[in-house]
Length: 122
Image (tube, rainbow, N blue to C red; front, side, top):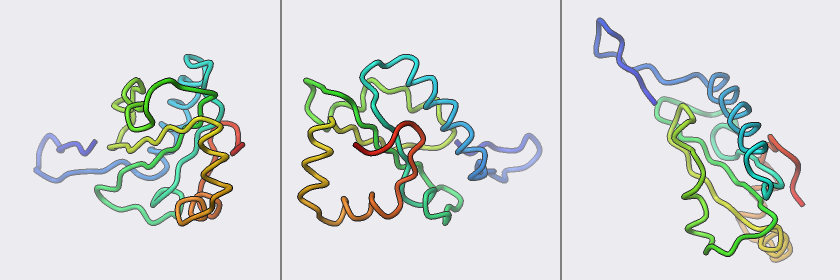
């Protein structure tokens, strides 16, 4: 998150390198804590290299299975430990494979710009 300098009101945002180092550490801690985690990638501005002040971190996690609805699956992930706001999408392996077979804009974007931190796309 942005921090205010102790002597000014200037905000500093973490550099892309700082964000990606923190992401790798976070990903490793999640892999150790979650036996269902198959793969994790980032995409969007951090993957394209065009981040700026206020850029969030877009993540996609692939899990072996889940009984939760897809839009509720990110609730158990401690994204607040990352240094910038984070959007996390969580797919099961079956959902991911189905989405990729169907194609579409999101599938093409993931093929083009996803950077896999853990594992790789099933």
